[in-house]
Image 1 (cartoon, helix red, strand yellow):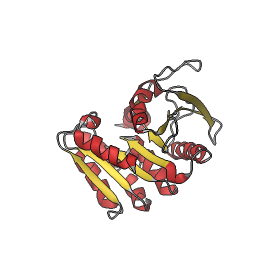
Image 2: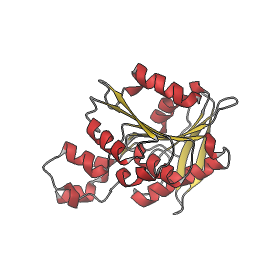
Image 3: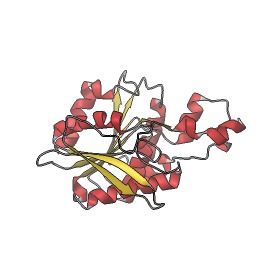
Image 4: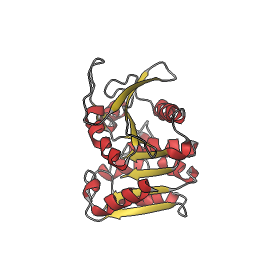
Length: 248
């Protein structure tokens, strides 16, 4: 157990590095962006661009891979005539810096501020997936965007860790909190949460508990029956709900 304390980043984050001169290639029109962090590191990001966009989606991705993978996944939203901005967390892809909960929240805000210089806030949709939900919730709590969308979020990191290892004392070992449960009540505008009933990575119950902490008069919880952690976009209920949310 002491080993977990010192190496817990390997369990929480699963980044894949890229050489600084790596050249991205996607079918959609995109721009590569590099932003300086408060501690003088670099956040690498992609902005997928459409003609006459309705707005922009600020997308915070899951804990695996880098922008090669997530660029393909997030370009899905271009079909709704939205620009899409997706960043790699520090130590992912071309982004630099060491993992640090506070600084990673700060990095997310830097990305939001960048978009505010291009789009009005009522055109910014904040979207989080899995681990990315914690950054999405934090950013949404600090700003006044159009809406917040969460896909397979967890209540907090301790909750999802206990689900996988119920007999271990993670309460005393985790150096990362990712307490979305303490932040989501500060989001005072439209929020939509998607969760699959067969999710064995982040349990359905964790997403449901997070919903209970939200402003429920402004929050919708969308249950995807038989959905897993990885396939919600394949379900008609998800597709129809996303279409409605992005067409407003």
